[in-house]
Amino acid sequence: MSEDILVGDVGGTHVRFAIAHRQDGKIVTGNFEKFAGDDFDGFDDVLSAYLDQSGVRARRACFALAGPVRQGEVTLTNRGWHVSEQTLQTRFGFSDAKLINDFTAMARAVPEFEQDRFEQILPGTPEPEAPVIVAGPGTGFGVATLIPDHGDWHVLTGEGGHMAFAPRSELEFQLAGILLRKFGYVSNELVASGTGLPPVHEAFCEIYGRPVEDVSPAGMRERADAGDEMYLQLILVRACAVMGAVGDLALANGALGGVVLAGGVTERIVDFLRRPEAADRFRARGPMSEFLENCPVVLMHDPEAPLIGAAAYYDQELRK
Image 1 (tube, helix red, strand yellow):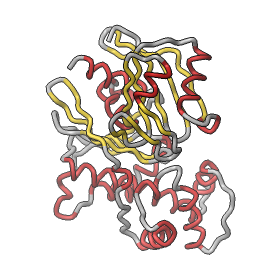
Image 2 (tube, rainbow, N blue to C red):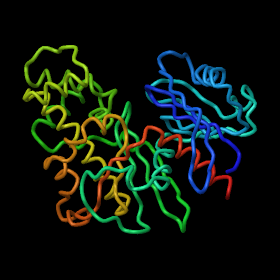
Image 3 (cartoon, rainbow, N blue to C red):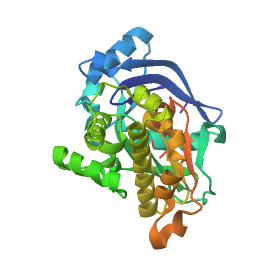
């Protein structure tokens, strides 16, 4: 991929763009810009703003979006923007515009990074050539499976964040009951993601018999750190939901190559993910507990990971 490619990371909260190319075997990015999605009516508008501000011109583009991509089109799960490859090519003059799921890009970034980009959550030893789960909550809850293939990498994506939440403790059953009453279905995304935090907060206030206050995520964390039991349990339940979900995914996919966590919510609760309750939620699997005993869990640190992954994905597609 000697030619520059325009890459984008389109989430439920922010939109990021950059220009990327492969140099000396590594993906290199430049002209990075970040926009707030709330400032725009649609993806075409924010892309126009980036192109106007940066002066960037590119013939090829690959955009990673937080929603299921079908036949070259996607509607963002947590924003409602509709994006089409054909429309982008027509309006912006791209010779090729590719749309992929944001966690396809997140997963494809993993092989591009050195080990210093990852922080250990649970120790273990990855099995060579085994699948890797790449998942975690941000605005939503993204999931992908990274599959090695003789030097190349394939990514299997779906909507794994919307798998049903599996409560195990009495408190979690109470939470699930309240959310079920309000929403009719309780997913891991609802319990653990940024979009799910307000209803989860309201449910905890109901359980603890407290009035609902307007408290930011940072404020909730401050109260938990100060010893407020309700907020401590709220964050712990969310951490256990994350670890339980990725444990389920690792079991289902035989992902003994490890689990890579990503997403803004994940980064903010990383110390809770290491707590014994959360670690047990990942590893304790009845007769199959030994299966995940040595499966490592790490956190990927890099805000440009989906951009790098989009470029790496597109580069690999060109070489087919």
